[in-house]
Length: 246
Ligand code: PXP
Image (cartoon, rainbow, N blue to C red; front, side, top):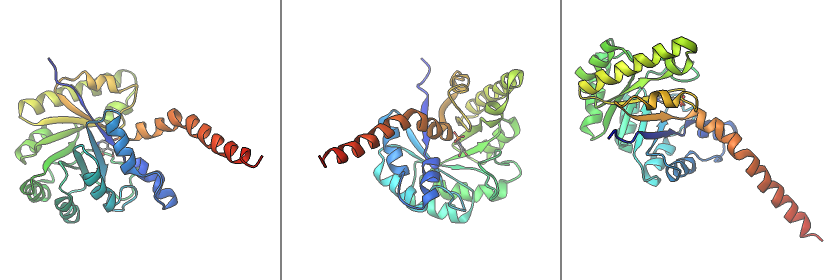
C-alpha cells in the first residue's frame, strides 16, 4: 500500500496579516494548533531575513506549544543556522532568499552553491536537525543535493502550479521524474509552493512524494470559509449587548 501523504501547513501568512497591524492577532501559533487539530502532520514556517511575517519568537512558540514536527524554512546564512540550532526544529528547509521577492521565486542553486551550503548543512545535522533543500525538479540539482548529504529534497511545485493547459502536464511529468530520482538516491521527497484545490490531486498521485507543504492558498481560502461565521458572531455580540439595555 502507498504511504499516507503528509500535509505540512505553512502559517507564514497568518503572521503577514498580524504584522499588518503590528499586534498579536491573528496569532500564527493558534493557527498552527488549529492546523494540527484539523489533520496537518506538521507545521512549516519561514523565518525570513527581513522578518516580514514569522518572527523569531513565533518559531520558539511553535516548537514549544505545538505537538507536531516543525519544518523551519530559512536561507542558508550563519544567522539562521544559529537560530535554528537554538530552536531545534525537526527539519530545516533551506531556500534561496532575495529581499525584494514577494515569495520564494525559484529553487536553490545546489550545484553552484556547494561551498556555502556544505558547512551549514553539516552544522544543522550535527545539532540533530534533518536538512531539506528546496530545489527545482532537475536531475543535476537532485544529484547535487544527494552528494551534499541532504536528508530531504522539497521539489519546487511552482512551475507546475503556475502552468496552464498542456504545459501543466509537462511540469507534472518533471515532478514525477524528479521524485522518482530522489527516491532512487535515498532522498526523502517533499513538494510545495502554490498548491491549491485544483492542483493538489496531480502531485498527490506521485507515489514517491511523502509530504506536501501548503500555505498561502489555505490562509486565503480560510477567509471565505470562515468570514461569514465570524461576522455572525460579531453580529450576535453586538445584538446581545444592545438587548441587555432593555
Ligand atoms: N515550500 C517552500 C519551500 C516554500 O518556500 C513555500 C512558500 O513559503 C511553501 C512550501 C508554501 O507555498 P505556498 O504558500 O505557496 O503554499
